[in-house]
Image (cartoon, rainbow, N blue to C red):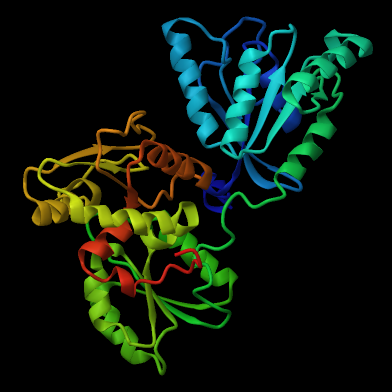
Amino acid sequence: MDKTLSAAPVSRRTHIGFFGRMNAGKSSLINALAAQPVSIVSPEAGTTTDVVKKTMEIHGIGPCVLLDTAGFDDAGEVGRLRVAAARDAAESTDIAVVLFSEGSDWTPEMSWLSYFRDVGTPVLAVLSQADKRSDAENAALSAQIEAQAGIAPLSVSAVTGQGVDALREALISAAAHPAEKAFILGDLVREGDVVLLVMPQDPQAPEGRLIVPEVQTIRELLDRHCLALCVQLEELPKALSSLREPPALIVTDSQVFDAVYAQKPAASKLTSFSVLFAAYKGDIAYYIDSVRAIETLTERSKVLIAECCTHAPLDEDIGRVKIPRMLRSRVGEGLTVDVTAGKAFPEDLSSYDLVIQCGGCMFNRKYVLSRIRRAKDAGVPMTNYGVTIAFVKGILDKIDTGRNEA
């Protein structure tokens, strides 16, 4: 089978990031852990110029991504960009491994440990390149690190394999908690439920395939032994009339919320793919609370539309055209709307009155939560596409999220 079809999506894999100084042994350690050459190993400082990603399976963790980052002591203009890439990788890291090597001034390492602790990321300390020192020297360095960091480091050698198994077990232990919420559909469905999926295949839909939220939702319905019926909006009346009982749940594209709601049986719950992913990837309660900021927008306000994927926008692009049009129809044409794509997310959000993000299906939950944290720190409300559309159309209180916190 084609691996691109059978492999777990990167966004649903546990992201394990390796951080340390140049030539601290990050690449060698990753190669030893993966038992194959993943990253280039060189005695020359700065060999790793960007984040190297290796998707693999680790027994006890499951599908994961190993992130090999540039040294955080890299200097110069190019070095600054490398460190920025490492910091970006840190925001998507579910489990962090911080490497210590020679020396006694570990201020940078302590700073990175503090960062991961502050954001709630499980973090492991590793005393790398243990083969270069005697057991006594390793023991002394480990004691110093533990005294400063409050965490006992694992002594590891990628050359001899010392400590690699212990590191693997520590990673398994750190991954014991789920990286993402268990179900996309939350508690909205039970085994045997009939679920109707309304999926318009308009010009924005990728030719010959479905978008990621649709694929993952259908797969979950199969795994949970539900009966999934997929239609376009035009076939919705026929689909409903063909069922002896109303479907337990209708999941739709947010853009046709109102049209689907108008035809929805009273007994059927209603949600959208975007709302489901808002709860699955982010903080649905915060999104719902934040969307009410739309009521306070004026023509002098500034809104950021943050797309997680990069694509060539079409004439009726939801993020670049439809949502700005909805907002300006309420507020006025003077409303400023900026758009970013991919990981191009502003460091300073203070100039914005509202941030509206897509469902985030291309990013892991950790990265989406890092954006939410930055918005909260800046005191800027943040919501998402599906919640925004439901609010603007006046049916937000009719939408089910499948999460108790909403």
